[in-house]
Length: 211
Image (cartoon, rainbow, N blue to C red; front, side):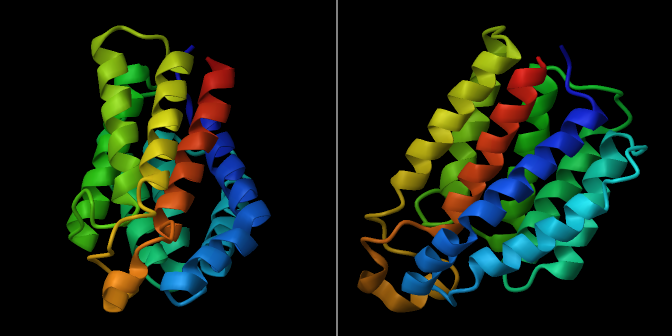
């Protein structure tokens, strides 16, 4: 079945719940190479975003815009602008379509990733959220090209995002606060890549079960 606006709202709520559950872990990761506030900031923004979805009447782009504005206005640090841009650009990409198939979900994620890269100037291997998002997007696009069903596409994307997240551990950070540490940033999993994995995993859990 296609992904509807109701599914998008379920996705955001699932992402918010995952971040709330793991916020201490995200903060621990960020304390090692950043400001130590990633979990707290992201949890605050997502909690506000989830509350804003309660009316349940928004279409696809309006849902994404609502989340984007909440993230930008309520999330501190770099997470707000980056996640806000992800959702804003994702909403623009879906246009006025009433629902999304596998290709549409891939397009949503590709647009969000492109926005993150434009905003953060990050490339693969920089030890950022891009390292989890890019493999997930590529997995979705490959699944769409191969005519895979949505649950399969999302399982592949989740696995790819997890692998990308874990692969940040040995990398030296080249962007953000972590880059100031130089060699000392090696050996730590990137918190942004970790929360981005949660984003993809939440989509797999919600869109996959509704398909």
